[in-house]
Image (cartoon, rainbow, N blue to C red; front, top):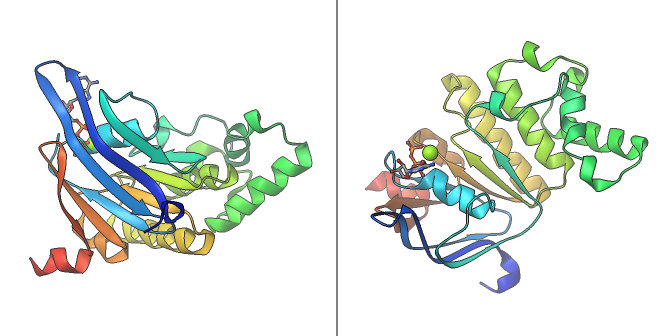
Length: 218
Ligand SMILES: Nc1ncnc2c1ncn2[C@@H]1O[C@H](COP(=O)(O)OP(=O)(O)OP(=O)(O)O)[C@@H](O)[C@H]1O
Ligand SMILES: [Mg+2]
């Protein structure tokens, strides 16, 4: 794989919250452009920490990180992410640093809402959305910013099984249609059916990776 085919690269990453407790240790992984990969592992093994390092919300003690940019983050609980009163205002809020005209912002917001099939909810107050709709709005925010990489930390944890599968199928479709790259943390193995690949994290490093079909065989 040449460098231009890689959207996320992590090399020998080390991170500790305190000198006695190392979370990530010699952690390395690469995600090819245009693919959806899943990050698996027991509670506390460092999945969320790794995503925060990728998003530059934490600084590694050692190692190298590369990601395409811009980068979008989708949290487990959308109420921690959606901050404005309505759907359109929330998506537009993410564009404030881009110095766009009002009409350009409207185009971006609508384009993003179309991508998540929620254009009809443009003027809906955030409080009147379902959990699954909120997650799609969070994803629309990243699409409006033209994010090349999406990091999703257990985005389906609060959703019922049908909505969960709808969301993972939608992200798979967006990844393929827009040639963006996604790293998705989950404990729900049925979601692996939609992934191009998986990483299994244990004691701070990737101990297994590859085709999700192989993981099911084992
Ligand atoms: N702010 C913090 N300060 C100190 N330790 C922390 C902090 N955040 C996380 N940790 C510790 O770092 C380790 C990894 O946590 P992390 O949240 O990355 O795990 P995870 O794999 O995402 O787990 P889960 O599946 O439960 O979400 C855990 O031992 C956790 O207690
Ligand atoms: Mg976590």
